[in-house]
Length: 282
View 1 (cartoon, one colour):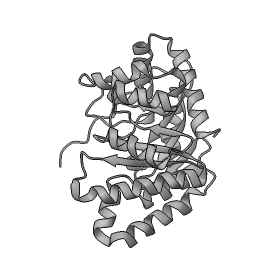
View 2: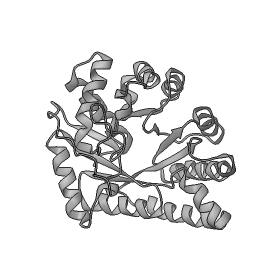
View 3: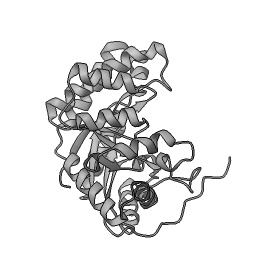
């Protein structure tokens, strides 16, 4: 077995608290999830990341997100079938299996600590042509769930920008839409700005080859920007190749503030207010 990736040291605390608008703490938990959750939140809070949105990607992780949100006052949850999960379910059991999984997500979505339906959307990078029909069917179902439960819709969009926008326009987007781990460019950012959709930026905005993401950040209005980690994935520079965590979000926040030409405290306060607008009070 190879060595495990190193765990980065905690960065300098932020001058104003922020919200991690998207993470997967369960994927980094060991045998004691309740204690591990408390530990992860404590480490994050010490550097100013005081609230976290725990995201579901299938029925099991969505159920965990609900449990985590109900066991810790600074965690809220989201529930969904990931765009790459829906084709897998459909391939194994057809329409009936996908409908059953969606029904379980619908039931979980009713919990008051669930604040968004997601992550859902389209992923044309990992899902081939044979799985796209099920993926789109699932996406449309999640759009309806967001409307039914009057909760935000959290979008996963990879190599599918135009199709995601098309389906949102065709089906009618919910009142609140978030493009998680924004991977678009000026065009997609302009669409989000025009329609009042939020763009949530992860550590990818710091990557050398992410000029498109930084171009999108430059044109997004202040009131529609969120910050996230997508932990344990996508740690910001200089921690690529290491395990990400909510406690590393100050690195991304400081980078984004510099890119926007604003004070870190002001940028942190703005994104915190935006997160409260999307997810409500914790």
